[in-house]
Image (cartoon, rainbow, N blue to C red):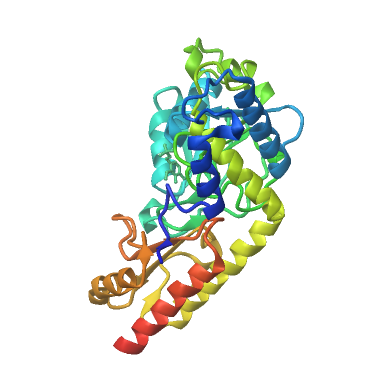
Length: 355
Ligand code: PMP
């Protein structure tokens, strides 16, 4: 038995793996594989339609927003956002709360002025900055809702008249959000939505074309919106597997139901980190991520032995990112409470042997 705590690509529900593999051999009784079907076939257009409508339903996307199924990862959105929204000579406000935020800042600087309104870099990103002001004339405010590497999450988005752009790669569909509060939400699919290769973008229609810049077609939100995400060949298989995952989420009761589970799972793991004298959490308690749980050991010399001990018990992907060290357990939607419990038991057993 393997317990996959990988940060992404990551665990998806077993039934999604099974249904996706069936479709590789025979997609919806067409006698064709999902890998060979045309993206213009009516059967695949139905997949796109259902995927878009499930995203709208599960996230309660209001009128006036377009849902796009793109490629290039969240990393390409670091570029597309300023290209589409930041006009020549304008300034965008950015919150620097982790490695992904700082990558987004680097790209935005290619297109206009960037005002970093706050940063927790000096504290190795162990908290999410809170007291900052967003200038009213900023073209947009960009933030990362969940810092996958450092294990912090932004639970309260600022109230501002400036459009909020959020990179939700690692917590999209894990908790309820009010889409109407945002100008753009984007996410690489490969955590809570589906396999790698697909990027979700939800964009407020009135923001399209805002920069006034001439854009290459593939980098223009409007082109993708006007073509219902079929301007070019989309990530056919990733979209299909994401659809299966969205159906799974809906059947589980949707985002509100999974959020409850995610709170329960993360509370259980943080409680063990706080209780067990061998471990500690490096992040500000109120900012602790429900998706990526980072922890280190009081005695760093025990980290290698603990990693080996956990690997022998089937734990996969718990080694922390090189910039944090220690451990990171990513406990995305599809990871069951029983797997979290198995990790907790492993930590307890290790402490008994090394107490
Ligand atoms: N933003 C966040 C918050 C991420 O976690 C990641 C990937 N782990 C990225 C951006 C980059 O995503 P991609 O690899 O899809 O470009």
